[in-house]
Image (tube, rainbow, N blue to C red; front, side):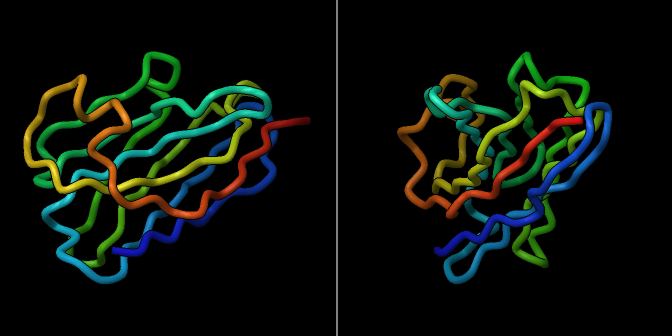
Length: 127
């Protein structure tokens, strides 16, 4: 599976942006897909995840209520809609896919199950 993340850019505080993760190859519908981010000088952190069925979704506390993750298995895509963006959201955003079919929070929000990573797309929130 190859993942391609896109949609990053420069946004003013309070603005919105949607990131997209497109998968090529493999059976995408069987993969949990997560979004992670890495800000300058910081470690990569979990942002959001959606299980392969789309029935279970988890968000980091810092983005809950502002970000929405969704998937369209017919199009092999997972989107991350980001609203009310803040300067602290500035980071490189990565999507990742893992062949995990459970819904355990600590498994889905960690790094271990993700075998495939996209190249990252950069978001800058600044006025």
